[in-house]
Image (tube, rainbow over all chains, first blue to last red; front, side, top):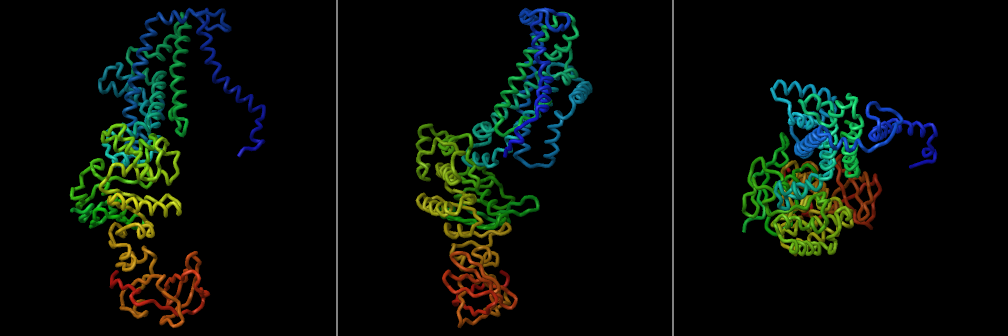
Length: 271
Length: 329
């Protein structure tokens, strides 16, 4: 039910809302603007001139490519790990009853609720204790902790909506466990997994805190940007990379939103 | 020929709960068999034991002479119509019906032909292209039936198949199910809590209570000659008479059952009682009589004179209507 009174928003509230949104999103625009500036030492406003040369410079910087490749590899593998573990875990929690089920459900979600710095420090000391050298795989492991949660949350929501008798119906009609997974479970949770996977990829791609604790000498793209900001030369290169990061993380989240907006909430967007 | 389904001392316990407790059961091939009981009586667990979704804690199950325990659902020649129909929401009606055939590796054209034939059998020809979400409850039920029958099961299990349908549709489906079963000759085992449904459709009925079978028999036997107080009360809400009351009404000092519709009010009746309540049911009127602190319910056919509450009336019944159940029924 909607009354006229509710539709009439006071002017003050409209302005406040607009100001809030502007405060959140104008800095993003500023990043884009500085990618085109002709001045490369300090961020001077307004830019003295506009140029596209930083795109060429960025393209020819091997360190950018290294960082980008590493980030894509880490995000891809973390996502695959998260898809497998998150789906299995969601299936176990939603389809069966066993002792400690609630506790496990909580423990799985915990990494996303914990501050990244705690996850990072604890993983680092664990790696030290176990004498595991920092490598590509320690970064993947760190990222997988929170990527699993995202996939799990999406999958578990879908599993709950799925009638339990669907699986029994499939078995009843002659399908074994694998056939049931392929023909009934996967088609029903597919979009949730896709959405969860895309979110996991985006989360991993721009992760800084856990990465600083679990990476050795390697720099993922966000870490590289952090280091780059300190350098006084060729600063707009960072802005060009930032634009790429925004696009690479924003598009999957948008896609995930459209894939699951019919009913499912996307969990873990906030991290 | 072996029995379609045999249970020998089958129990299924969930922790301390004895969902099914030492049940013996024999279902003949081609029989329309009903498992009747209140919720939690173990009837659905028995159905799931036949389907293979549950394994017995102890006891032995045979389906057409083959040992069933340890055999997973997908290797049993048994199909189920689920209470919530469990149609696959991502598949259209034709693919739902053809699912079992697809799993068996039947070719696409053959599958489509058999699915359409099955849909025709349940009076839904041409519905193959629709999604389950676009169908009404009654149509979904027919699709679920077609999806099970297309596999030509040896036993068809139906779990409260008509529970979600409205009265009119339910009566229509009862007749269709009965006709279908007769035409196909497949053993049907169906679970229901509705005694009317069980009595009108089944060849034989097993009445369940607290994990045990109280009585098995034809609808007529179950209705006319209940062996226990529970059966007498659950099937048709018979008057269960205590040994004292039975004796006072001229019978032996034992538990007995007397159907409300068998009691007549007439002036030359041998017994007297006081009317304490009357309620109009449409096709009949139910009145409650008090006899020395115990109550009897009487169904009067519509059109007969209904006494006022407080009135003293005389009543009688034909010899043989009073069914004596024994000392410890």
